[in-house]
Image (cartoon, rainbow, N blue to C red):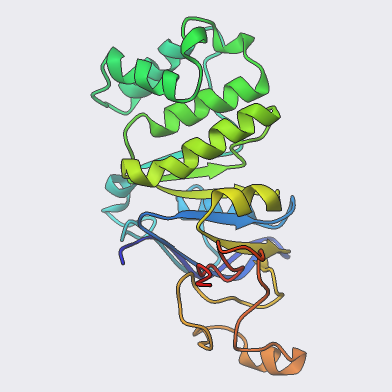
Length: 265
């Protein structure tokens, strides 16, 4: 199984504050991987480090086999779409022109037919010629998603993509995200909504105060239960009585566990 994104023992500090602490996760190709946690859990920070927008304090980071700062990292980034903390849009430009500007900035071969396809995909075809400044928060999110998918990326990273959407819009975007692996795009999506992650994702990891949800460094997604990661604090594990045989279940249905493993039965 090909790994498209990996965080291994990621630590991120701002001054004396540790925002992400020994985080491990692996995003396999073809998955919809959820990063679940409340506001302030470290989801967006982890995503920023993965995309090279912030520097790790410690740990190993790989994106499409490349390490941030390496000569091959820019080429890897060109195969990744992202929507982080809301889209950056040109308010006076139409939805269609925002996509044209993005294509020109990234030197993408995106004819009008492709742009119209993306607008149709996210439900904005009827507002293609409206200025982005007139859009609601949910419509802006939809346009940001269209921009993220414009280049047919191998991996798309979405930070709270259903933010601002009404219930019908949440269902539409959820269904779209579920379909992306069939189109050749793997998804890493963050959310603070447990129900959405349950319905949307194949695999998931729970973050709480910058750590995996059971309070200890967790297993990488798909790793057999009972293994313990290198670089974690074994003494702390023993002191707090943390088990080596896995964490809590994310849901009772047949979708996934908190450690990132698909549930098999």
